Length: 181
Image (cartoon, rainbow, N blue to C red):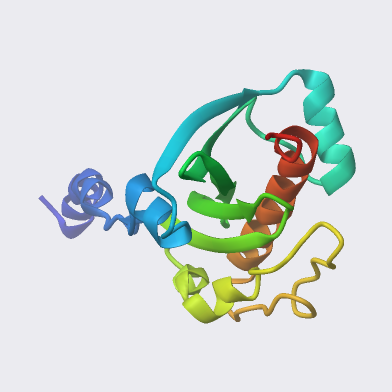
């Protein structure tokens, strides 16, 4: 067999052996404790959106609500609402980034944690200093990459998409969760 045929014969093996870059950093329970350390219980709910509601989210955030359902957890301590814990996914460059956002009762971002990162580049969005730039944000605040939220060279799409996702979740909070007792 000549060299070309050997190379062609090994291509399927190379494709199977291509390294995966997915990394899971936290479980949902671990992220809940990090973002709501004082909460004692997390009551899971599923928000179900119809087309009209998804259109309202897009109109208010400028971003499409990709899913018909959004899992949220009501974080409580002694029966009192501490805020909302929301798991979401956005596209990095090619793959999904799974992250958690904690939102206070009154609509402030309390924190963001990256749960799973599947891209080959841009994982710097996991850095606490970058995620901290989203803490305290409300819908009244500007969300401009490289102005209000720092950009990370080599992670621009990840930065922009996580930032935009957090803004969309603030809209979900305002439209569907803010009036909860």
